[in-house]
Image (cartoon, rainbow, N blue to C red; front, side, top):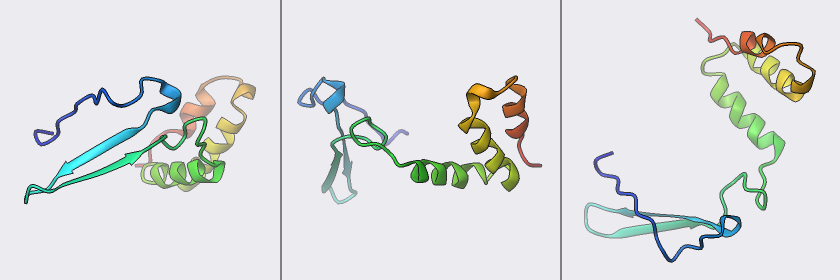
Length: 97
């Protein structure tokens, strides 16, 4: 983190509906490489498809949960409003040994 500097660029729009992120990396030889993302993935104007966020969840959750629990969590969250109590979800989120 000692090599990271965060600065607010006043030229970026303040309107959150049109915000974007710019990253500049200074290489050892002094060159700078910049990239910008006009709208982040998941922004309401640039939505993420269900299959994309489910895939990301499966990939991350499978590192700590058993496969059947990963699928169970997805099913539970799909019907969150029908849960009789939160314990159903927290039990499914117990980490693998």
